[in-house]
Length: 296
Image 1 (spheres, rainbow, N blue to C red):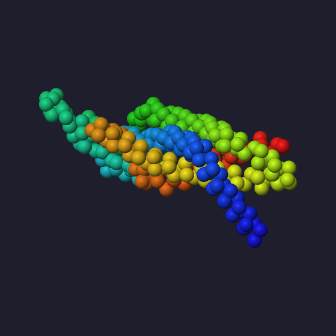
Image 2 (image 1 turned 90 degrees about the horizontal axis):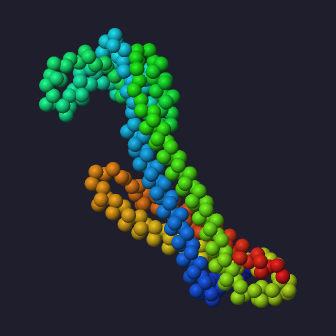
Image 3 (image 1 turned 180 degrees about the horizontal axis):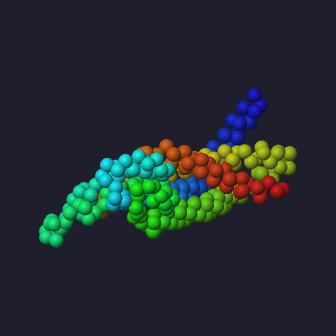
């Protein structure tokens, strides 16, 4: 029973302190909200960039040319071996005639192509991969298959995709880590200002024998509540900003070169991350703020 009473006391004091120091509480909520919005925006940029790169990966393919001495039936039979290669997601067989038709497409006005025969080309396979980072390994394995004479793969483009993804992920992680530290510092100082007005009260409680935990818990509850309130406000503000930016991109993106992940599909994850981060920032800031005043 005593434990339940203590919990009720801590929450009661935490709520009371929020409204007693209304302006400082408002400032703390605004700072938490701003920090989460900045961190969330960088994270969403990284998520959408990763999504676009994944789409490009899904369309990535390389060409494997069949030995000229192979008949069409023999060439077709190689497909099963190619499909068994690790990291290969799709294999499409293209005959000489299909390759010629594709080459002629858009060049119908060129008379030099009228007498071009399919025999001048080779049967080939269009091969899609699952993981673009393993493209070189997959291409080498394909080239080692009996009946495959040559492999045409743009390794530089694949490496460029990987480099862009790694840089984007690294920058996002570094910025988020820096913003987390800055947020803790700002919230700690904001709450410290509110705590400063209660330093005499804390000193008296310490002299009367109150434990550090008894003094700290109301501040922990206060910081957690401020963090959660800031998180909820940041979540809905982020939603509105994201939707507005997405609308502008759609209106100015006639060729659909840029695609964005739906905020609704990420909403539960974003809300959970915002609430946890906001609570950690609020509680951590409160503990950092109260630590100095406990040294009586």
